Picture (cartoon, helix red, strand yellow):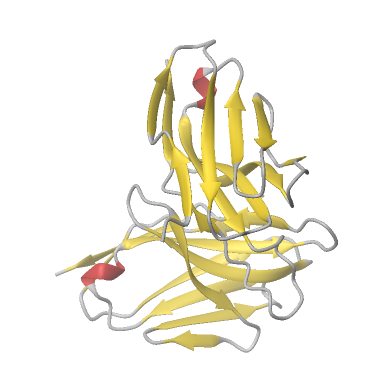
Length: 112
Length: 119
């Protein structure tokens, strides 16, 4: 089983729709969680951190469910510019090196 | 703002050839990383450097070597390229290793990527 799993999609949604992605992780010792965005043929960029209490940044909401070991990303009022691949990132470990594991990404296509 | 700059952006090699990917960051970050990205595999860590003067293996180090030349620069070398090394390579940097204490952002800053094809 992969340490971090995401539905690759693609998710094709109309402009204005709400869409949600989940990401599951297998190691309960995982400590930190993030969502990155990667545009086609570009480098990944940090979208937002995921806090235990949930956090919101404009149209984006991230949540963590430690009991079920998944994180989610909700995008409201989708824009064409939201079309991208969304990477889930999970960090575990302590001391000198924390293992960073990237999911394979979920592709979102927002349709006019 | 240059951020993380990596070169070359594209390269085609023949099996057995060698090459070096260069990476430089101007954010005064301590930690630097080399990843490869393959379809269906996600980003995988090849090597990392926690600070100037140190390097360590990541998940997939075989076939690669690295040099942390100074705080700014971290190069990745393929001594004898193989078709399995066809990939997109990303250099990244962060202020520090991804500490999990409150306040750590976990933010990695990536270069634009280097697309390598080994024939």
